Length: 96
Image (cartoon, rainbow, N blue to C red; front, side):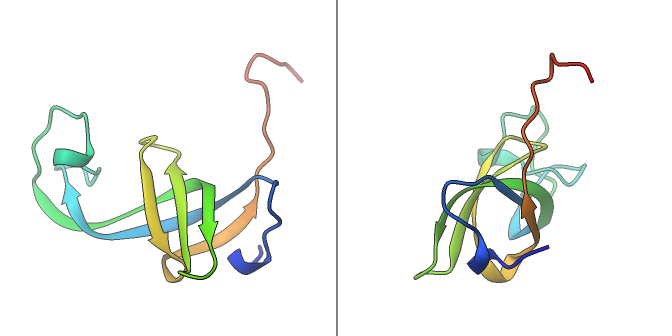
C-alpha cells in the first residue's frame, strides 16, 4: 500500500474511503438525494466503500473518487482514505 501523497499523476489508483454523516437507507447505502434508490432515508451515518481515484487536490488535501458499489462520486479528505493501491484494468470480455 502507498500514501495518497505518493501517487503518480496519470496512473490509476483505488482506495478504501469513509464519508461521514450522510443519509443512508435501511441497508446502509447512500440514500435520499444522493441515491436513485426507491428506499427512503432511514438514518444518518458513515458510509465506507472502495473507490477509484478521479482527482486529487494536494493543497486542500481532498480526493474525488467513484465508489465501486454505487457508482456515486464522493469528495473526501485525505484523512478519510486508506489502503491506496494501483488499479489493474481488465476487459471483462477477455478470458484468461
